[in-house]
Image (cartoon, rainbow, N blue to C red; front, side):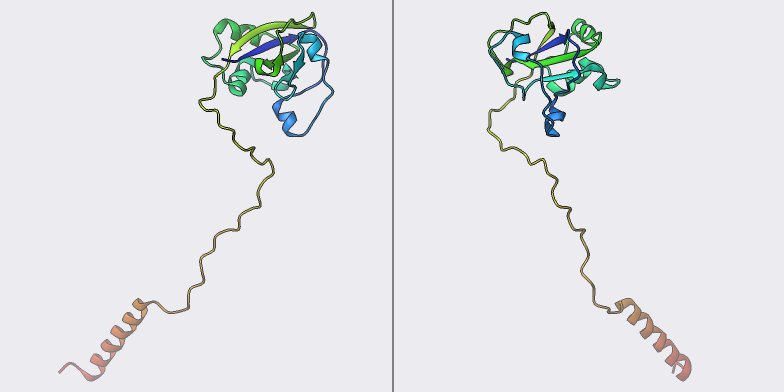
Length: 170
């Protein structure tokens, strides 16, 4: 089972490095996170660091619930701690770290949350991020301009009625 480590950042930071910023192609200059965490190496493509004000009105616990899928949800006491944070946070899945974390004074461990494991281990191809070409709208094939059969039947009945009236019914 893998875990997500949530750290409060005790330094003023203005950098935002999330899945969304990576998708947009942004590559900000990150602080020395391996030094702050006291680890040998860090996969920065798996971590997130951002100001809590970037979440707008969303609580941090709700963001973690949606973005990282905890195994059993976040316990109420941890939710309260997470939602009381101010400033910036660092979210580090343990799969992104090499070594045992020994954070220095620039980080404070707030919570460690068990994450749900995938139910498969398939190596799937990456999805393309570029939009596909718009599809052409479906159009019905043009019909031949043949009058409907009901019109012919109505004209035939009218002609028969006119003949009966003109020549009489004998």
